[in-house]
Length: 327
Image (cartoon, rainbow, N blue to C red; front, side, top):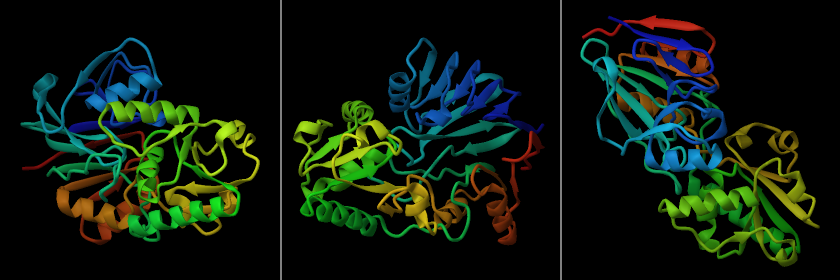
């Protein structure tokens, strides 16, 4: 018997009645993490405890929630067992490993980062026969420099701006990247202000166990000398800063002309996704019989894997895929 996978605003597994990261309301969906492009008002969700807390904060409402600690098998219908493993993307982000006596094992990564981070659990690489992986940065040019080097450049940018009487503004998504950057600034001992939504989510992450250096909510009256962390499109807050010096914190900073395209003064390649080299390393560690790529440069990365001897196919462009696992 073959697994059947449909790709349509998320992945649908009709044989067991579950979605994987459905982007529209579903009866039942695994939620890998609480970023807005991976959540919706589902009736029932399966996720990690931290994701459940952050999901409720970002999308309040009634739903049935099953929370699973990492590494604990949980029985689903039709003889399938689900086990969550950390994905290293943001706090609570998880991969799901599905196991069935006839279907075999299927690992869905969601968004993940193999490199160690400061605000997420270390990524696991459980063995699986079939791997469905996100490939946002699936081209060879997307190899990130060491985080310590990038963090050092971000700190230098902030120190230079403050010394010049300007306010350094670090543009980061409010969940995940902002907490990573806040923790990265600890060694610089710079006072930090957070956008209101970033502040709210950082407070929750602190309640979930992340430790942070001192920070406060944005207050224009106390602005001089502070670093400001805010979402990329927080135009209202930016309009209240007299002399901002902006820096985008994103993996796309590796692209030529990133500062012009992102309309900022600087851009630093600190990402919460796997770079090309880590995508390859992840496949080598999971050792699947088949790889299905999803998002970003899915087609190109699948071609790269085939050239290296892997059975790989991009599913981001198709509507349905059926496959059989051997062994």
